[in-house]
Length: 288
Ligand code: PRT
Ligand code: ZN
Image 1 (cartoon, rainbow, N blue to C red):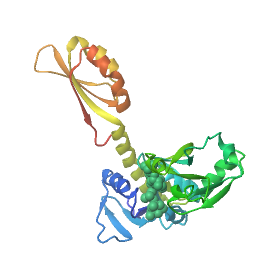
Image 2 (spheres, rainbow, N blue to C red; image 1 turned 135 degrees about the horizontal axis):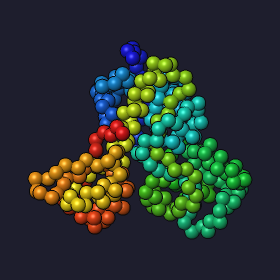
Image 3 (cartoon, rainbow, N blue to C red; image 1 turned 180 degrees about the vertical axis):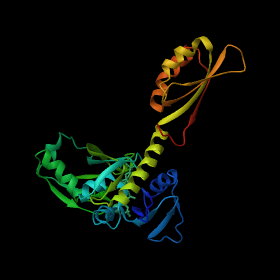
Image 4 (cartoon, protein in one colour; image 1 turned 90 degrees about the vertical axis):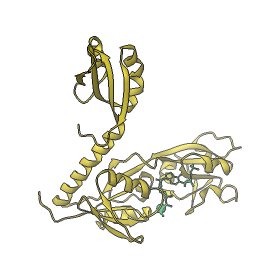
């Protein structure tokens, strides 16, 4: 289909999501040049315009149609609760949103927070969690450096993003409840026209090829001919493995695709079955 439309994607201007978002687009064959920290850029390799925004603003802009799609943390999508749908989980910027307390406190479960004050930049998600657990606590919104709140007497506990846990640790806090496991996601507004929808489908096709490639590896190995059948059963692949004769009589080369997780489970079995010279290499794109 010929189209004059261009899809508009909002990504974080600077911060933890910026690099991962641009890398993912690049892996989808989409490049751009952004001289001088502009707000907007036109991509090459796909009819796409990029808008560089604060992540907090992305749900609103996508809801209003200023951008058609956006990449941001799931935590921010749920907190802002705008009219947008999550259509892809992108697997980077993984973190969790957790409740934390001074480490010396004995935590007894969500009821501990009843009548207490919790400092957070995520008042909605925190409130929803408390409501679900039937706990009535006071929420104190603060925009940043939430981890210092208990130390300065602003609140008894906090609800904040945790990644390695070192920020909590160095502030004498411990994580007591994980409210949300978050990662970067792609969101879409509710009314794309059909041309933009078709572009989005193409972009998602590229994304799925990139994501599939990341979770699979290409495996090559040598095997005695009489072991080929047994080894074939161990290698799931997209279809059956490719088997070609080696220059050495009685031996074959076998090639297949394996899920990265499954690879470590079958490696011992492959060796036991007689596989030698096993090579595992990354796949750049995978279309099943
Ligand atoms: O300027 P803008 O508003 O766009 O950026 P921002 O400052 O709001 O966001 P930014 O760039 O800090 O984070 C963007 C998104 O990255 C978040 O919404 C999360 O989805 C995700 N993310 C992943 C994180 C972290 N990891 C993270 N570690 N966001 C924040 N942190 C902070 C956290 O707030 C805490 O202070 O890092 C500290 C904890 O890290 P650890 O490793 O010490 O546990
Ligand atoms: Zn932000």
